[in-house]
Image (cartoon, rainbow, N blue to C red; front, side, top):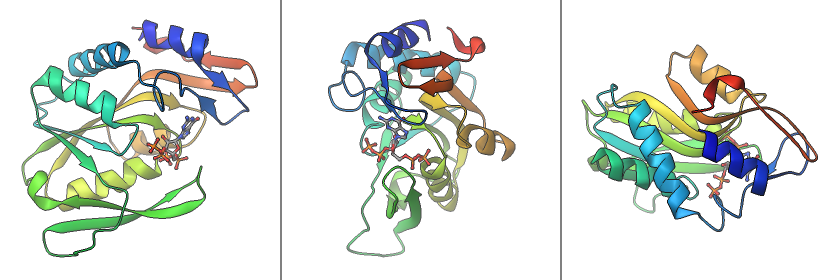
Length: 194
Ligand code: G4P
């Protein structure tokens, strides 16, 4: 997605080889118009996937996921990062280890929001190690639903998440695929410019 790549180059800042700051349009201040374009792009890419529900992980995935759900005319579900106070048969929970925060958290979903037979499009802001994505997949599949695709706004392809998800057989569509970063340097893969 050309406009996204342009914004990353203009407003993003690679602070080292691993971390890209995009808090002026994605993680803190949110450019809603850009999110709308991102939503339309995901909707077009997954138009053939028979999606019935959009799922995301709080909090920075919510804006792009909401715009995708709006464009596709589908419900959106947010996976919570806190443990449920009332664990019941209605709730599924899994531990996810955040590499950036170096701490685990409990990803939580109420079964009544994802049903057997659903085809879920999972949308998130970043794909790095894939820990959040694999945690989300565990919960979605535990509810009897199928993951129809994974849309990630920014994918750091030099970290293992993208390869691991594809090796596991999931369809992953990054809108901006970064192949290398360093202080002041951001390089993209050539094949996802639209
Ligand atoms: P993983 O899920 O792919 O394994 O990634 P990891 O644990 O490393 O990432 C955890 C958090 O850090 C996620 O946000 C993710 O979006 C974010 N993150 C990963 N790499 C970058 C990066 O290069 N730049 C920025 N800005 N964020 C990155 P989170 O902790 O869940 O926070 P939020 O969604 O509430 O914002």
